[in-house]
Image 1 (cartoon, helix red, strand yellow):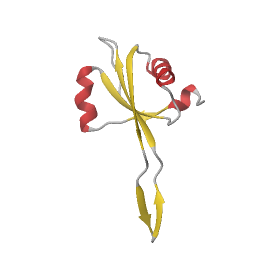
Image 2: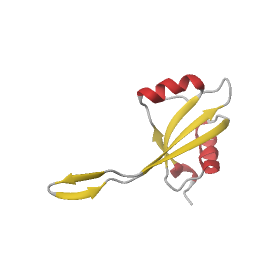
Image 3: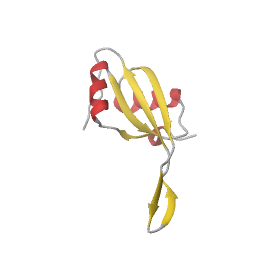
Image 4: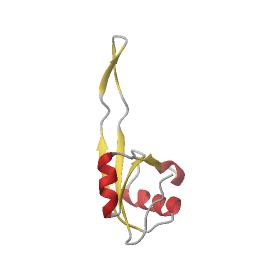
Length: 92
């Protein structure tokens, strides 16, 4: 079970992520083993906002070749967090 401060790895700032911010949704890179309730608790504690909904997507690492050898990048997990009306996450 990951610790509260280890769950959120960072904000994902992409063009699609910027589009959905208008709907009070933010895209976060989170720990692969974190559950939706853990992500909700971590976001509320770190950013001081009320979370309405958490959606997650898991990604497998891609195969890559480096100096003739094949290896795999690590997989990661994305969380799309919807905050309460009138609140927002301050991007630094």
